[in-house]
Image (cartoon, rainbow, N blue to C red; front, side, top):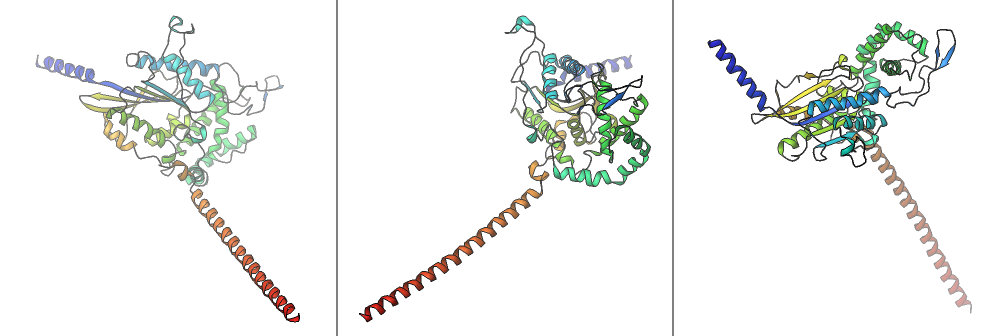
Length: 421
């Protein structure tokens, strides 16, 4: 009897705990849907079974495929199912979505919003079961938050000259020497670094994912070989942003942006805000996971992978939950546990570990020689001006001396003429 009473009391306590947990804000960062390869016919002509050769079916590189369109819309439905009660209808004061300035990410965002906020034709002023929801963007060359592969000479130098030549990376290259040798022969690619495995993996992955066959697979392709290539590529991605000098420049800007939005929500600065969505790339998710100290090779973001950060209020305390869904083939979301924040992770601790990680002046840090170059240029300009002024002074001195001499000579001539008369 006592056990039953205790069990009942515990269940009631847990029920009350659950009821008191209120969602205040959701931040979703997703990779775009399935796309065509980044280059046209990366493996050139294909061998057919009958011995003939055909060129791969033409396609526009880097664009969403039909599969990508469908899964982008379906991910919007996933968000709808998760936040249907929290976000009943689209409200511009509650929802803000931003995308990198790429066709595939912008399309993914628009399709996602269509699935997230469905409407009927009768409700639409244009008679279509669709509503126009804005997607914001900035030029790629200044998008330090979402476009993680943005050119950064400082980080790139560390990656290519140090990390790609480190003992651990060179050991991986040696362990997969036969694989690289075979791929060089079949593809004609140089494949001289671990990073270069992406040149083979990317078009194969895009083709494998494309169920409509818009891009063909080479004859040497086998599922077993692809698994080898994929595993090695996934391992290679753990070297992208793991260096502590690179992390503040790759992914920390987005983490800080998310943290600031959470801070503003808690402080009451943005009381209406409920959902922030970011349509991005696999490297963006990798950079964010690295800065959260969560990334592993088996977490490489597939098409339509998503990280969701949620802010809750519970008994007057604010807590954070982080969820990960790696592509549409994964039907459930996995809760991620932060290493330096016990569950439930307090918002205070999350903000403490997230704010201040990024570089204040990203461009200055990425281009450390720019200041020196500017100083050198200034010195050259000052030196040139100094020489110019000095030469000008000499010319003026010579001119004045010449004028004085001519004037004296003129006087002497005038005096001689007067005396002669």
